[in-house]
Structure formats: structure tokens, C-alpha cells
Length: 74
Image (cartoon, one colour):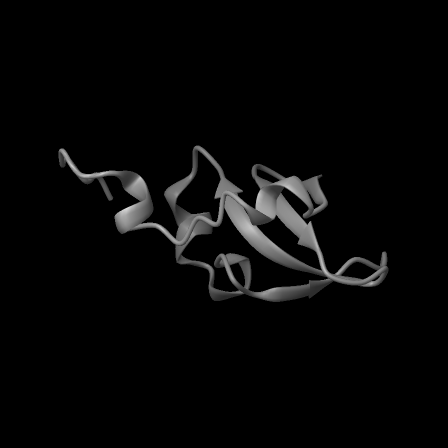
């Protein structure tokens, strides 16, 4: 989705710039995608951003931003 506007992105996207100074982020690499994860606990994280050239990954509900995932290897 593209959004062309003269407004600030913070008006449309849930970005907390104050929180980013204290939050711990980590990038996970998958088959053909990368996830930016905010560490919640030593075993869980919240998906912040999905980066992929393949549009099919954006339709996968388990990779949507806001989902809580396990950081333990299976």
C-alpha cells in the first residue's frame, strides 16, 4: 500500500519515538523475508516490521506486525 500525503507519518502509523530509545530490537531472517522484532521477554517478541520482496508474505497472518512470537528455536 502506498500513501501519498503531506501529513506526518506518525499520524497514520503507530510509531512511538520515545519508546525506541529504551526498546530492544532484533532482526530475524526467514526464507525470503526479514522481521524486525521488539524483545518483550527472553522467550517472546512482538513483530514490528516485515520486509520482503514477495507480496505473499504480507498476506500471511502469522507474520503481521503486532503478533507475539516465540524466540525459541524449534
